[in-house]
Length: 361
Length: 231
Image (cartoon, rainbow over all chains, first blue to last red; front, side, top):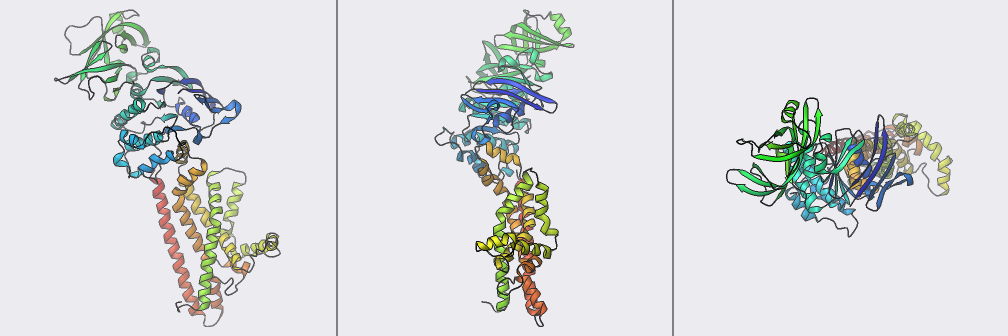
C-alpha cells in the first residue's frame, strides 16, 4: 500500500499546501494543534472538499480536482477512527462492530469478527450500549469497527486525545497489535511524542499547513533541528529483551550495548522501542567509575542545536542516535563539537511509563 | 356494539378516527421531507417554506377552510383537475382528512424537525466512512435516532386532526355519516334541544383522546432526548 497526497486548501487566514507519500506501516502526521493535520485526514476521507488535491491509494484515485473527481466517502473504503469514537448510540457494541460489514464488498479479505473481538478484548462488552462504556472501551470499539469494515487504510484522528494518561497506556498496546499483527496501513494524526514513538514507522512533521520533513521515524525524532521543546525532545532506540534479573532489573540489548531497566512486562527475545527524553540524558567525557546510573552509551557527537543557553546534542551510539539537552556551560566545559567522543548516561528509572512499546516488526 | 353511544355518535367517532388516521399517515412522508429540509438544507425560499408550513397554525381555521374550498372545490384550479381524474375532496370525508392534515401539519413538522436537529451529523459522517451510502445512513442511523420524535409528531398530529373543526366545517360542511366528525357532531348536538347528553359523551371522548396523545408524545420526546444524548 502506498498513499499519495497532494493538497492545497485556503482557509481564512490559513493555507494548507503539502504533498507527501506514505509508505506501508504507520505514518504519523505529527505537529502542534492547528497545524492542519486533521484537515489532511478529512480530505483523504472525503469529508471535506479541498480547493486543489490529488489523493490516490496505490492505483486508485480518490480525489483529483483537475478532473473534478471525488469518490464519495462511502466508496473510499477507508476506516476512520475519530477522536470522539462516534459510536452509534442506538446500537449495541456488537452491532456497532458489524455496521461496516454490511457494506464491505463481498469476498474482501475482511478481518474475522472473532479475531478482532479477541484482540481488542471486546468479548465482555458485546451486548452493552455505547452509553455504558468508559472512554477507553469506547475507543477500542471504534478501532474494531473501523477494522471490520475491511478498509484499505485506517485513518486515526488523535484517537487517544480524549483519554487521560492511564487510559492512553491501556489503548496503545492494541494499536501496536493492529500495526504488527494486522498489517493494516495507518495514517495517524497526533501531537503526542509518546504516541509517535510507540506507533510510527514514518513521521511527517507538520507546521502551519506544510510538511516540513518526512522520513523514517527514528531519524526524524533524533534530528536536533526538528526536536520539540522540553520533554517533547527525545530520540528512541530499539532494543531486545535479554534477561530478567532477580534483583528487579531487566537487561536489554541495544545494538550490542547493554541497557538496564526496572523489570518490564516483556518476554526475553521481545523487541522493544524505548523513548529517552533529551533532558534525562547526561553527557560525560569518559565513562565514570562509580555511578548509580546503569546505562552508559558511548558515541560520537554528530549534531548540535543551540537554543539560548541550552544545547541539544545528538550522539550517535551503537544503539542508535540519542538526544541530550544540556546547559551551554556544560557544553563549553565538555568541549562539545561534532566528532567529539562522549558517553551518554541514562538512569534506569528516567523513562516515562508510556515511552516503552513493542518495536515494529 | 356497546349501547352507551347512539348510532349517530358512533358514526361521528368512527369517521373522526378514519379521517385522523388517513390525515396522519398521508402527511407523514411529506412532513419528514419538510422537517429535513428545514433542519438541514440551506436553499432559497427556506423562510417562505417555513412560513407556509406554519401558516395554518396562526390563520383563523375558517380562512384555511375557505382557501381549501377555493382551490380544492369542484370549481377550484386543483379541485376541477382532480375531479376529471375522479378524485373529489369537497363535501366528502376525504376533504375532512385533507383539512385535518393541513391543520395538523405544522405540529408534525415541528416535532420531527426538533429531533432531526438533535441528531449529531458527525454520526452520519461516521456511518458514511464505514461504507453506508446516504440512503443507508438515513435508514440505519438517522431514522432510528429520530423515530421517537417522528412518532411523537404523528401522535400529536393525530390528536390535532381528531379535534379539527373550523377548516373542516367550512370546507366539507357537517353531513352526518359523511363529513360529521366528532367536533362537528358536538356542535350539531348543541344546536338542538336535548342534545346535551350526546354532546357530553363526545366531549369526554375528545378530552380523553387529547390528554392521552399529549402524555404519549411528551414521553416519546423525552426518550428521543435520552437516546441522542447517549452518544
